[in-house]
Image 1 (cartoon, rainbow, N blue to C red):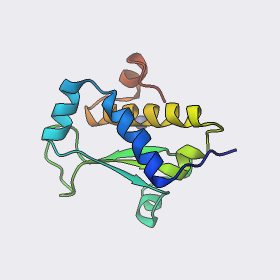
Image 2 (tube, helix red, strand yellow):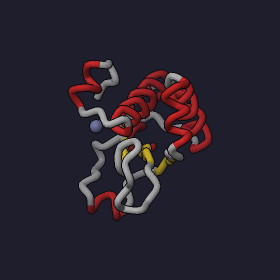
Image 3 (spheres, rainbow, N blue to C red):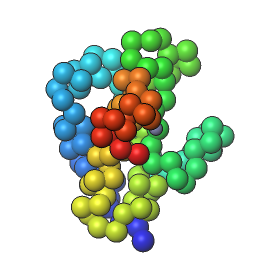
Image 4 (cartoon, helix red, strand yellow):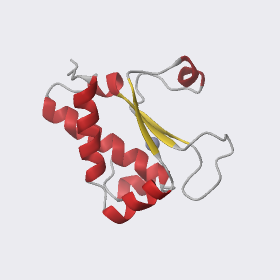
Amino acid sequence: MAYHVSADEFERIAADALESIPPALRARMDADNLLITIQEGATADDRGTGIDERVLGYFQGATESTFSASGYPKRIVLLQHHIERWCRTYAELVDQVHDTVLHEVGHYFGMNHDDIEKTRLRH
Ligand SMILES: [Zn+2]
């Protein structure tokens, strides 16, 4: 089971997911130059930091308004092939991408998993 789409299509789905975020929050993400990037899968660097096939995406960098010690831009990475792996249909893929984007945006705003659970930003 795995539902694959082209990189372009995946990007469109991710863009739609971002659109679903309240404008006030999106404005803060934009002002902070938060990057959303899509990778096919984990890189060697990612694997070195414990990103395995069960990880659908991750947030890298300090939380909002704190200086990023790494010097790298803050970014949310979506792992396309990892997400596709859990989906059988287009609708499931759309749901999974939305969930993953909202989950990582939650982390960006400093939420832990309990907080994310409470606000229905699942997994
Ligand atoms: Zn998380």
